[in-house]
Length: 487
Figure 1 (tube, helix red, strand yellow):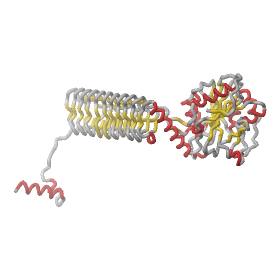
Figure 2 (cartoon, rainbow, N blue to C red):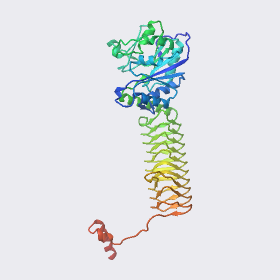
Figure 3 (tube, rainbow, N blue to C red):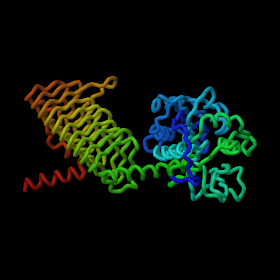
C-alpha cells in the first residue's frame, strides 16, 4: 500500500471506535430475489467476507446498514456476526444518507472505518495498513484507492499538483477528463469520528442521482482545513465490488485462486488449481493431495496425508490422516484414518467410517457408524445403522430402514459376514461373528455365530421353456442341447 502524501507524525488516537458496513443496496443488476450481499462465494456471503476482514481489526462497535431484504440480511447477520448492530435504511438516499443513519444517536471519538458490504476480496491486512497510515499521519480522513485497468463505474480520485487528494468524483458526474483517470475510489474510508459527525450533515443532493454521497465529505473536510490521505493499494483486485452475476463469478474465481495459492504454499498438493474449489472456511493440513474436479466446502477439515479426488465433493466433512476419497460426494460425514471411499460413493449426514473402513463403489450411507476395518465394498445402501469392527457387507446389500412411516435402526456386530444381495429389514440385529446367506431377507435377529438363511428352496420346472416359449432362441438352444445329449 502506498500513499502520495508524506506521513505527518502528529498524534491521533489509534482507537478504532466503530466500523460501518454499507449493505442496504437493492442489487437490481443481480436480478435475484436474494439480497445482493447474501450471495455466496467461497463459503461465505459477500457481507460475510467483509465482516471476516473487519473482525481482525477488533473494533469496539460494528454497525451494518441494511435495506433491501432486511429480514433475510438481519437473520444471516444474527448467525454469522451476532455482535453487530443493524441500522435500517428504509429509503435509499445514497452512501452519505446511510452513514448519517449509522451515526445517529452516537457520540463517539477515535476512528470510524466505513466500507461496502459487497467487496469479498478485501483483506484484514489491507484494512490494518490503511488504519496504520491514517493514525501515523494524524489525518482527518484517509481513503483507500486503487489503479484499475478498467475504471468504468468507479468514482475517480482527483489529486492536486502536489499529489494530495482534492476530491472524489462519481462517474455519473465526471467529465471526459476525469473519466480518463485510472485511480479509483475503493469505498473504504477511515475518518476522525468528530470531524465526520460535523461534516456529514452538510451533504447536498446536488448531483446526477439526487443522493447524499459520502464521497462529498472528503471535499467538505478539506475545505474546512482537514488533512486527507489517499492510500493506494498495490493490488486493485481487493477493492472489486460485486454488482451482477458476472462479477460474482469473477470474484469466486479470484478467491479460488487466492485460497488455492495459500494452501499450496502451506504444503498442500493441488494438481489442477483451476478446477479445485475450496471454501475459505475449510481447513487442510500439509501433505494432503487434491486431484482435479474437487470441491471442499463448508467447515471441512482434512488431515495430513489424505488423498481427495478426482471429481470429489466434500461438504462440512472431517477427513482423518491417510484417508482416500475418490469420485465421491460426502456431506457432514467423518472419514476415519486410512479409510477408503469410492468411487461413486455418497456419504450423507452423520456417517462415520472408522480406521481403515471402506465404503466402495456405488455405496450410499446415511446416519451409519462403520467400525474399524469393516467394509461395504460395492452396490449397497446402509442407512440408520451401526456396524462393528472387521465386518464385511456383501455386494448389493440393502439396510431396509424405512417402513413408510418411520426410520428404524440396524445393528451389525463385529466380524460379521453379510452375504451378497441380503436385505436387513430394520429393526434387526446381527450378532458378533454371524453370517447371512446370500439372497436372504433378514427380518429377525441373528444370534452371534449363527447363519441367517431367509430364502425359498429352489425348484426347477423341467421343460418349461420348450412348452411355454417354443420358437424362441432360448427354446432352440435348449433343443440343441437335448439333441446333443441324445446323440
